[in-house]
Length: 231
Length: 262
Image (cartoon, rainbow over all chains, first blue to last red; front, side, top):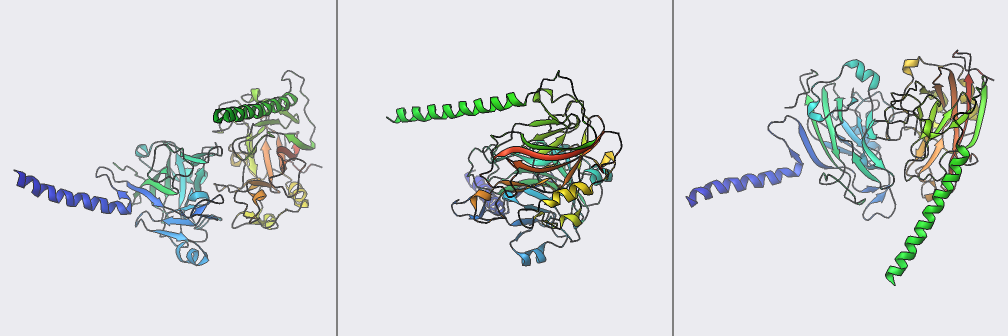
């Protein structure tokens, strides 16, 4: 009996080891859920807004691109990186500006965004519903009239993904808000932006909590339809 | 000894807090206009509002006390009337930098859910902008921006360039700051235009851009903000006092969209 248990126990240990190893790519997929969860994607953790933050340079944050399909990221440090990684449809969203908190789509037509003058056709609309309840992409007219290049600070106008009080400089994600996207190549997708702080803590009170480490969840409909059911 | 010291600190802090409260009370007293007073509607023309006291205690540390304005009567309206149709625009949020129309559909604004139907539209002309502004990266080329550009921009708007549906109910605010909207002012969060100068971080620079307003009564106006710092400094820094809005507007009272007003 004990032997049997051991036989089972060994593969179990191996499996748990594999799980912890794969935790390295910060990705866990719930089998009932076709959505992809990315935990703690490190963005530009070496930059800082203020002076004298240990181990950080006070400079503008490098933009980080992310591909929904390959989960590949690129850091854009300079003009050479821009030329190499931005003007293509191989990334879908980028984390830009202050604390990499402005999440922007890949669209060649929007000046001032990383995909400008590239082939991307990305777009984004805000739907104030929980992620799982968003089951189809809105009509084209919704994208045309209310499409945004990206989402960042919600200053009260409802058009961002986090609240940010300049009293405590802490970023609080807006709950039950989903971003329906057109990917760089025009597929429909939905995105939930969960956190900018390491470990996806439910509440942060410490201004120096490690950041930016992005936790987000997304689902891409690859058949070209508007169906966004992930469960 | 330690507790004695802390007590003194607490007392000092309380004292400071009280004096701030006292100051802001006085300021409010000056601003309050009796809602029952006879209202006088302005004539078609150009009006300039100088050092309008918004929230002079404002810092970059939070939302300022909002300031409601009635363009048809050229006056400040008390916050108690925010859910009425007695104001057209509000200077809201950090440094009073978000200009919202009084529109019941404007989510997140003080007029939300009220009877207001005002709308706004930021006029942008990239050819004109190129004189002072990097139209790809959305920031001023150099500061200060020449003053005469405000006159040029203001005079160049001779009509309402869009239909009412294209006018928006959200705010006109800080230009491309965490959004992709053209705004009336540039917020240099990092002080990146003046590297190494700590007095230049978190400064808001007005841009020579016209905001078209459709008032709650349906008249059209053009508004241009010159500054949010006291005495309209050309090149403000952290030593300048925010919360003193200087702006100019022209309003057309005949119901037309003619904004070529002298």
